[in-house]
Image (cartoon, rainbow, N blue to C red):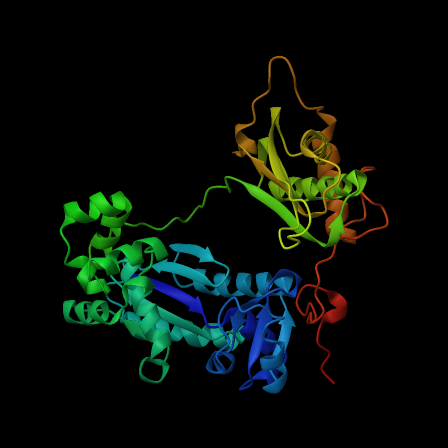
Length: 419
């Protein structure tokens, strides 16, 4: 059996843990640069605030309904997520952390357990130790666990946050209830196509012929159908492979026309990508750089371009990645445009364990020791203590976070004082 554990309105719940006065009130957490709503309390949802709602368009709704607004506090959310996942891993060794607020658990050898009771114990433990409310769906397959979890959240009074699909009758009833666009793994394009064939819910989907599903939705769609039929074909990804690409992109506060200013930002983005590579113990062999003008300034000339720069050896060095990124910028930069956004994406990523030297050209071996030292200092004394000469030594790149809460669990000065 599988269980999908999902933290309820996770970012909002994290804020409520450290400020209980928010309980029962409409709360919204905004995305990077305070752009749009990415987490809403149930009270905020009842006000008609949709996921992804642009903050500037809903300012009046926020103000008139006394909605509490927060900037995204990812260090806090990441730390709270780790605490939740550590608790979950104490209940079964088989766990797949699916996202910051979701995890699949597999219960192998738990035949003698009452899994509903067991999962209610997990729910109580997580709430008691972290203050985060969770919902749990239990079923014979991962896809059905997703369905069960949706039911547990949709009917909290009846399910108490835990629901188990334990019979074929339960399964069929759940599939008939679930709209086709809400099925895990069926996106907008496929759901629209299936609706055109009068396939309106998950039960209609599993009633289709296997060959038809495979032809229309490939083997991925067929696996999903098998899962919804109760046949487990998707297994836990307990050791997820490193990311295939790592990106750092930003929209500028205003527009920039000067090459040197954009070059500085590209260098900073490249360093950020290099740090992320080292964090997951990886190297890259290519870097993609792009620039874009402001598409909303219709009366101004428009330009967008990107270039892939191949690095002849595997690296995660700040200096090397920044060098190739800025070389790429030189090739695509055109004067006379108002640039609004740029970014760096490192690609051709491999584990550092698979590092191979090149016969003709290799990275300076001193870079590895230097990067290790820099990472140690940055972790100890804070980011932006050491920079490349190509970066602005006075400027710290900060997102727009006008409503940021304290870093209660990750910064010593922000720890709550009990008086």
